[in-house]
Image (cartoon, rainbow, N blue to C red):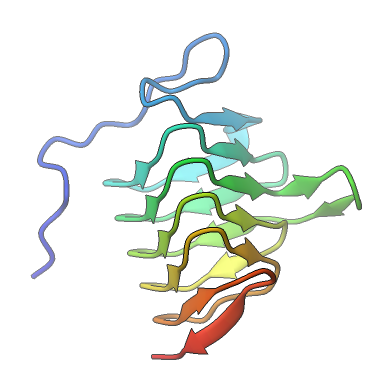
Length: 132
């Protein structure tokens, strides 16, 4: 049986500058779906203009960037990070990407393709190192 990391997890609160009490931010937060027991590190940026779904028990390191819209190349699409996935610090997730259930993304990775359930992936660009 999976024990939750947090006994009394609560949905984050945002101030007028869109920062949570843990100092991560989300632009277009109406497009953010956040599951219970998520741990998102400080200084992480989420752009949810075209939708970002972070399912239950997800861990995201500090200083990550998750984009549903990239203004540089005008890519857009919903990002889905499935249950129990983990994303290492300073990683970037591009628009339209799905990171599978229990997948692990190493620190400083550039995620520009879908990652299957249970996979371990890292690098710039991301490469799948091990599949479930």
